[in-house]
Image (tube, rainbow, N blue to C red; front, side, top):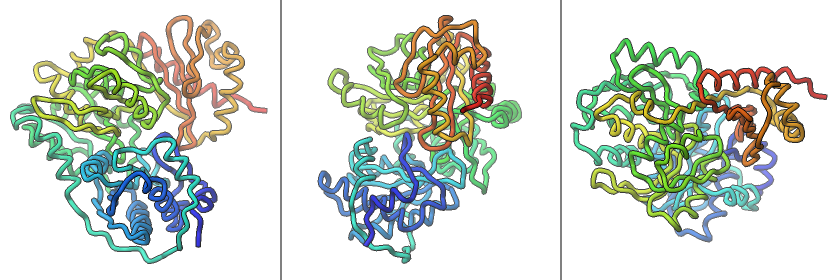
Length: 475
């Protein structure tokens, strides 16, 4: 007999900001079974269920991981409903409607040699305390190499499409030309149906048979150029894409300019007439200065922290939502759109913010909507393959001597007015600029976020900071 906590700890797989992540080689059948048994054990005292839903992204390793999880569920006498390749929010939504737990096999935006597991209770995404319960669970199980065949149930895909196409008639997007950058997104077979059902002419763009690790928070120069080229070539009004598992949107205006995720979230929340918001500390301060909302709460980075804030918002507000700098939108409460009730979906979603942006831009261009907002720009990037322990050492030294650190980054004429350590190290400078460093929670990366009154300055703050950090000689 194996004990789940021992297997999980020896695997080296850890929970990040959203889900357990690790190298594909670490997700052997015993490790997948350990996580599955631990997850079910951690929630079975609080929920009654006989079925568990599973879905996957398009990574080549995902089908076998799903089979290993299914084998463990079969050991527990539970029925497995396999929804195949669908976006994470599609799985989460159908599971919540069916009042059953769910496991999503996905590594989101990280490279294809890595993968991960996201867990959902019948009432939604697991909490940080649930993560601890999974890691420390002493569930006992037998190893098995007998992996089952899984037949695809299409209900999750159909239900997810109807969630949005039922809100408006087919005239909503009439006359609009929408490009869908498909790459290897888990939702690429759904998005065309959604936009076409609402009247748009949809142009599929660059489907890939190989996994493409799109990071909506650090858009590559190649994807930036592609969007501008596609916009001109196909005379597009809008470009839609997502990360690998379809819970983080990447959208471009009519000129092929990718929108920052928090700007997209802001426009969506305003179009929904949401009363209050929960957003991570890394989001643009334009959210408060826009005066669109009665209250804005700031949290640590990661959907579990945003969701945890919903409990507090629900005490004072009837409508509340959240979004992240990466674009994922979380609907915390039921809300009415065009006289239709949109059920709460407290996990990151890519389609709702895109749809509501198009609704808001019904009689004007997307770029005009953005231009109406207060002038405040953000930028972010990352150093990949940068050990987390080195990142933490650098940031610990910086906390103790922030102005020396600022000089080390190449900004000796500025000084630090305020330090925010809600998540990582966020430096507010005397000229109003912000530089924020944070080690990634699910990969060996150091992220840098910057905010300034001009986009060029925000880009400079990020690029120079990351370059300088790579040149630091640690003892």
